[in-house]
Image (cartoon, rainbow, N blue to C red; front, side, top):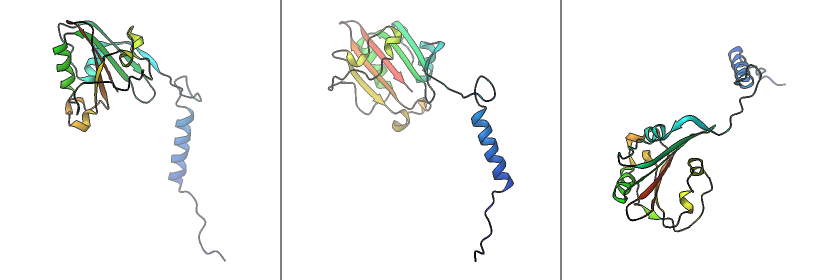
Amino acid sequence: MNCRPALRPSPLAAFGAVLLLASCTTAGADGPGTADVRTSHWGKDMGAPESSAFMKVTVPGSAAEVRGAVQINPQEDVYLLSFVTDEKTAVRVAEDLRPEKPLRTNSQGLPSSTELFGHLGLTEPQSEKGVRWAGVCPSCVGDNRRSEVQWIEIHVLELDAEKTRVYMQAF
């Protein structure tokens, strides 16, 4: 004979389950009962100012060809920033990120798995010969200025003796 009492959910637990189910089925942007299906898209009117603000990077006043964009994603947004400056300034921007290793050449020579910079009318930095890069997890190196940034990377490409293109990507 089984002497254990029957397990019944409490009224509070049942109410919580109903609320959870209701929020899952009515959370759509088009009204009750519609699914909330989000896809990646480029943020309208979001460019270099928004990207540099998120990354906490000051674009040098002498920079040319300043471009930026924000890709809105279901889980985490991607911020892009690019500009042309002199080599010394580009290296200084990279050092300000506090990477554990200095700028180095991509020895693997692999093309990018994404084509984000194409949105800015640029070739992907990883596909450029001679590009140098550094990446950093700001919280891992104690950079409290960038507490909202999980990862930031910089690619630096010398265009000629006087001009260097900086590509930055963060999420």
